[in-house]
Length: 482
Ligand code: G6P
Image 1 (cartoon, protein in one colour):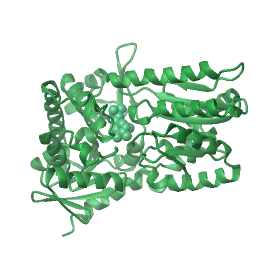
Image 2 (image 1 turned 30 degrees about the horizontal axis):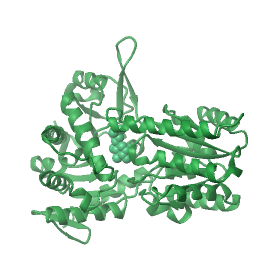
Image 3 (image 1 turned 135 degrees about the horizontal axis):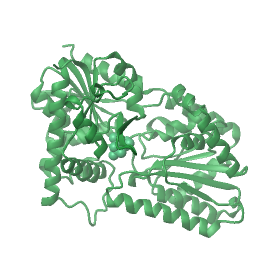
Image 4 (image 1 turned 120 degrees about the vertical axis):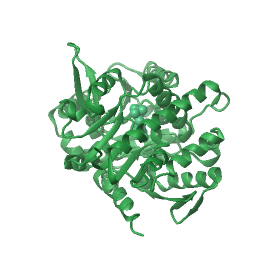
């Protein structure tokens, strides 16, 4: 019996399973902005979160639970009601790796190496068919979970077709769709086969409200809808067929108090002590990323190398902590990129290391507590993506900084829309310019750094996840008023 007043849909859900040594499944709960945004509503009891099983262990748990409802299978979900969809592994692989990450991510971040890619051929069409199947499975599950007149909020590019598919089944529900990534410029988006480009846009426009992290991405989406689909746009609304979709901007921020509370735990303190003693009083340049092609880690390291090559006065006076955590290793481009990051860090150390001084410390295994510790001691934080929906590290760093850090920030990160005024802005392709900005950060007077950092922290916490979600729900509800 469908009874959820609010249904959330995302590919990656708030829980993941692992098979322990004894063969039993154990569950762990994820963090992140969406989980913290939903904490209050999840506790209310009439919210259900629908997500995909991402691993074999997830799939086993989902298959064993009644209708995939993990919370009804006796696991500790922290009060969350979660329906996990056990999608056929081949369909999931084609939809997630082939289309969501292998095509849509490359398109929205303008990442294709255009002399060779993309190639939209018959095997690719098989992947697209799987993406349609994957989205259809979500639409069916959402339609089963949503109470009459419920609100359904769909997250991200994995589920672009869901709004229109769900509207067909359930015209009574209010549908929101939110993009956590950039949106491609129209000429770039038009690389996609025409029918696919139209299906993606029409899919999203099946929503009542489409949300983006910045005006830049919202405008790009609207331009695509007009140019590719021939939709009509006016006053923040796009009309396609006989349906109107509001296009809104919601710049997701962070929950400052929650983050600081986590950073006050003993595991973070222990790692901070270890990092401080490793740095031995030197200034610290920090970067923390998932190892994604869009994060521009290699050019960031090259900028640090250029600083050391052109300004030897910094030798032995600065260290670079670069945390590049694993991501999407099923894609060969990601594996190659990880190797390039490792090679570049190795070469810098080969060129410059001296007794007692290792210029770059690259860490590739995920350690959240160590990340918080590094952010708290950074003198300069480098966030230089070639393109990024928002980039929450740029927001977390200033909040966690103990003595005030300088932020070197790419103008292509969504966060630039809010943080540019107090940051050292860079063109992410300009390695020399990035080296100059890192040095400017290292030389910035302490009082100026402190003042800028405080302003950055205030901007970063302006729209915490809970308020971000509430604003979208309010816009969806307002749309009901004739
Ligand atoms: C990044 C993006 C999100 C996206 C996520 C998916 O964090 O900002 O928009 O949902 O990647 O990552 P995954 O590990 O699930 O492929």
